[in-house]
Image (tube, rainbow, N blue to C red; front, side, top):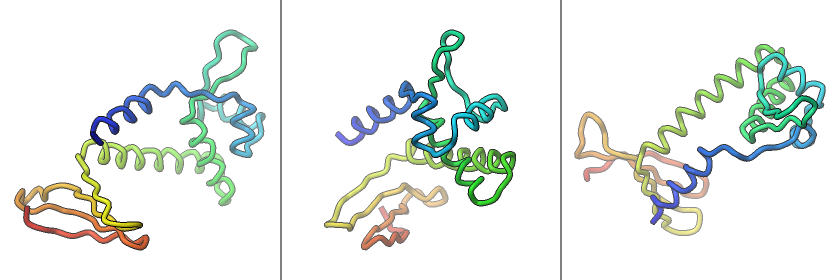
Length: 146
């Protein structure tokens, strides 16, 4: 049942058809439309624009990109460095997403704020598996025999 739901969410995310206008993007991120236009001109972000003078529509993924670039700018980095840091972060998130999607994680809720996540078998010893316990906001990794 949960695998079917995960596949459904994966398909929705993969379609990537949610769009926001430039003014919505500016309002949600606190980045001015002129900055957004400049970043788009520099190739840091992308939009879709059907015909000339038509509204720019940005995929929702650009919302996260713009927020992250702004975060690094607010930390005092130059625009070029902020963009580079955002790209590095995006690559890390991609790896984490692949890990989550490729693993058949099994989550067991053991009570309020308490649970166990089966992560998978140890490559060097397939009879041993890695699992995590989560309790009171703390996560611990463990090994056990299958």
